[in-house]
Amino acid sequence: MSVGALHLFPGQGSQARGMGRRALEHSPQARRFVEEASRAVDLDLVELCLHASLEELTPTQVQQPALTAAALADWIAFGPPTAGPADRFAGHSVGALAAAAASGYLDLVEAVRLARLRGRLMSQAPGRGSMLAVISSRSESQEAQLAWARALSERQGLDVAAVNGPTQIVLSGDLDRVEVAARALPHATVLRVSHGFHSRLMEPAQPEWTAALDQAGFDDGSGYVGCTTGVTAASPQDVRRDLREGLRHTIRWAFVLAATADCTPITVYGPGRIIARLQRPYLKGRTIRVAEGGGR
Image (cartoon, rainbow, N blue to C red; front, side, top):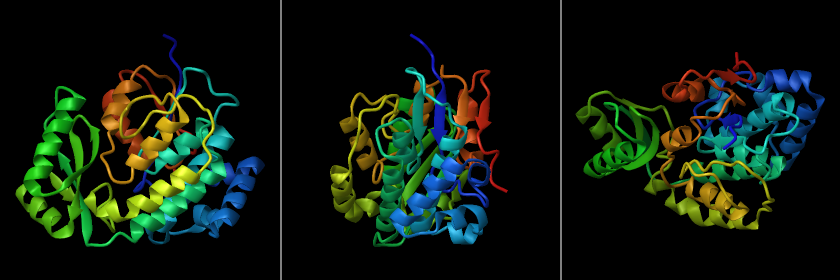
C-alpha cells in the first residue's frame, strides 16, 4: 500500500493571536478566501485572524469560524498544489470541517459557514458545563484506553469528550460533577472552557446541526479520516455522518493518529502547537511541520 502525506487541522482551544497571518499577508488567494468567508458569515475574519486578542477569540461562536478560516487559509497558501491519492486529512473536533474541505468533500466557504453555525449552536447549549483533562497510565491499545475512559466517565456521571492519546482523555458534562471529579481524580485539570462540549449537554443543538449538514452540499473527495471513528471515509455520506457525530460524541483522536501512523510528511494547518504535541507519541521517527509557524 502506498504511503501518503498527513494533513492535520486543529480544534477548539488551539487559537492563537495572529493565526493565519503568513497566509493572509503572502497569498492573495488565501486572503480572498477569508474575505469571502467573512461576508458569508457576517464576521470580519481577516481582522480576527490578524489582530484579535485571545480574549476576543475565546467565545466559541467566534473561535470556531475564525479557526476554520485560518486553517484553510494556510491550506490554500502552503498546502500542496495537488493532494496525492494516498494522502490523509484529519481534524480535531471543529477541525474536521477544515479537513472535509481540504479533502474535497466540502466547499471551503461552506466549511466556515458551518463552523459559524456549529459555534453558535454549541454556545447556546443550556446548563452549566465544563471539561476535565485526565492523565492516565499508558494503555496497551486505543480500544483499552476508550474502555477505561468510559468506565471512569460513568462513575463520575460525565461523558468522554475525547481520547487524545495513550495517556490523555477529556471528560465533559455538568460543571458541579466536573469539579467533584477534579477533586477525586489524580492528574486531572479543569479546562478553561465555556461549556461541556462533546457531552449530553450538546444534545439540544443536535437537531439543527443535523439539518444543516443534510442541507449542505457534499462532493466526492478522498482521504478524510473521521475524528469520531479513525476510519477513512468511503463516501460523502461517511463524512457527513462523522461531522454530525462530532458535535455530541467522543473525539477518538488516538484512533486517528494510530490509523495514520505510516503517513509522511505530516503538516498542521492553522495554529498547531497543541495538535503537534498530541502527535508526539505516534511520530515513530517522523517529523511534523506547522505550516504557518504558529501564531504570535
